[in-house]
Amino acid sequence: MLTTLLITSAILNTILVWYIIQLVKRLLSLSDNMEYFFEKIEEYDQHVDVVYGLERFYGDETLGSLLRHSKAMLEETKAIRELYDPDYERQEDAETMEEE
Image (cartoon, rainbow, N blue to C red; front, side, top):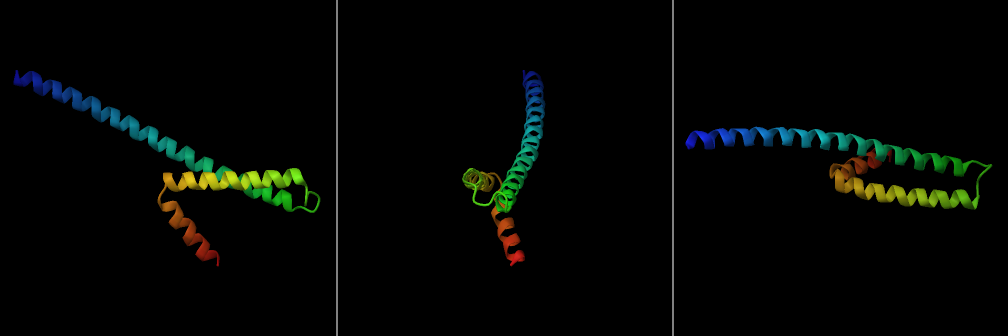
């Protein structure tokens, strides 16, 4: 009886360890993808800002609306990023201080 319980426990523990390893791999992959997504949103915002600042497009209402929408999306992604990565806000503050 005790041997059966020990074998069953060992099998269940092995399965649980395997499952935890798979979850960690998925979370690391998700983390990499989220970081890439955040970077692309910031690059997009900077690109729209540069295009809007060009003399040819300056004052264009469609681009102005796109720029405002871009800024709103960037703020939303920053809020999500702060939930996702608690150290992000501190990193951003440190970068702001270095620029000044």
